[in-house]
Length: 114
Ligand code: FES
Image (spheres, rainbow, N blue to C red):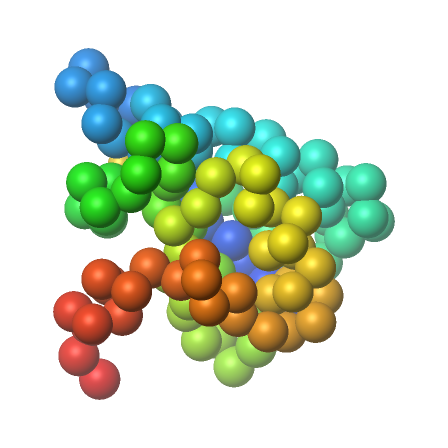
């Protein structure tokens, strides 16, 4: 990942059952994230890629998707958010280096063992 300050993995998986992230907002989240980074001149600092299903789509609300961010110290943060949250996410997490606690996926935080 040399050359990037952060890597954002957005789940945009689409399935016929309609409950996966791409069915519920993941595609819009990825598009909005790429646009926001470009508008702010950050697209060369942040790598954005799609990620496959990580089994977090069921807890997501109807317009949310699962997103994982690796930034300082390669620490991963799992979020559940929608495209309306992207401005806040970019400003707080990617620019200021603060997690947006109310968007953090608390279920995966509880289930991951250190
Ligand atoms: S489809 Fe996104 S976590 Fe399963």
